Image (cartoon, rainbow, N blue to C red; front, side, top):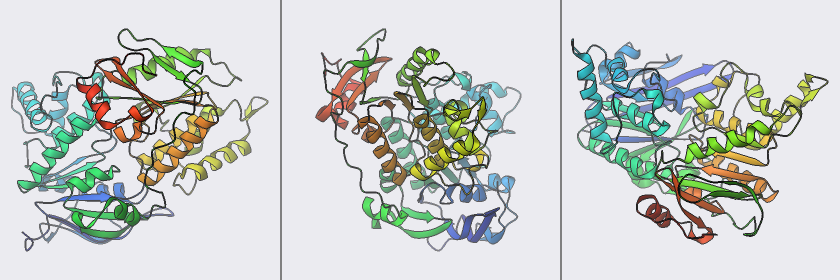
Length: 486
C-alpha cells in the first residue's frame, strides 16, 4: 500500500484572503487505509485546507493530484473521486425530511419510487454508523435535536450511493454527540479504514484523535508543523506541537458557593430533581445528548429574560451551542456581534458610543484570543471556533448574574478552552453563576455541582468529589435519582 499513489495530495498549497495568509506552503498526502488526524488551534488553516481538498476553494499557488495524476480540481471532481465531507457547520436542509436530504446529497441515484429508495438508503446508513439511533427518516430535519442532525449528516457521508466513498473528511464530527454516540462513530471510522477507506478526522478532543488516527498532522499559522504516526505522539506532546502554552487541564477548585447559600434560581421539572443555582456556582448539566438539557436552558432563559428592560442589566445571558441558528448575526460585523448584548451600557444620549464599543470589543478580543485582523470584518470571516469565542464574550460582556451555556466549547481549541475555563472560574469567584451543558464529561469536572439528565428529568445530583466519569455514566444509563444530594 505504501507504494501506491496517494488518493489525494497537495504540494506547496498557498492561499490568501486579503491580508490574511490561510495556507502557507502546505504539503499533504492522503492514502487509502489510513485515518489522518488533523489538529491545530482555531485559525490554523484546517478549514481552509478542507475546502481546498473538497474543491470548494482554488489554490493560488501549489498543485493537487488525485490517484497520482494532475487533475482539474473542483467540487464535481472531488465527488467523482469518492470524497465526502461533513462540515463543522451542518449543511442539511432543515425544511426537508431526512430522506429528502439523502436524495439531494446523492441525487441521480433514485428511480420513480425515489422516496422509498431514499428512506431505505438513509435508514441503512444510520443503522450502519449509529446502531439503535431511533431517528425517523421521514421526520423533518428541523424537528431533530442538534445531535441527531449531526448523526444524519455523518451517516449520509458514509452512505453507499453514487461513486462509493473513498475519502471522508469529518470536521469536528463529535462536537454535539454524547460519549456513547461518539464511540459508535469512531468505531465505524476504524472499520471503514480497515476496509481500505481513508478518513480525515479534525477534532479538538485530542483523546479521540490519538485513539483513532493512524497518522497525525499538526497545523499552525497556515503551515504543517508536524506529520508523524499517531503512536509517536503523547497528549502533552501533541499540545506542545500545536504551540499551546496552556497547562494540562486541572480539576478546578470547587466550593465557590457555600452549600447553604440562598439559591439564585430554583427550577422545578415535571419529573426528577429541581435544578437550583446559587450565586458563585458553576452548575453542570450532563447525561446522554437530547435528554432535556437544552430544553432546561431555554426554559430558564424564557423565564428570566422577560424581566429585562432597556437601560437595565439583563438577568440572564445565553451562549448558544448551535451558533448558526441561535447565535451569530450573520450580516453583522464581529464587533457588533460581540457588543450587541451590552448596547445599553455603551449608549450615550440614545446613540452608540463607537469609541466605547471598540474599546470593549478590543478588550475581549485580547482576553479570549479572537483571531481576526479587524473586528469590523463580517462575523462569517471567522472560523467556527472563533465565532464561538465571540458568543462567549458577548454573554460575559452583558453583565448578567446568570450565564446559561449550551455546549459552548464546540469547535474551540484546547489552548482557548484552558483560558475560557479560567475566565469562568474567575467570574464565578466574583459572584456570577453559570449553568453549563456539555457533551464532554471531562468539562463537568470543572463544575461545583452536576445534574445528570435522563429521559427529560434530572435523575441525579453530584457534587464535589462525586463528579466522576463513572458516576455520570451510571446515572445516565441506569442510575437512580439522588436523594437529597447537596
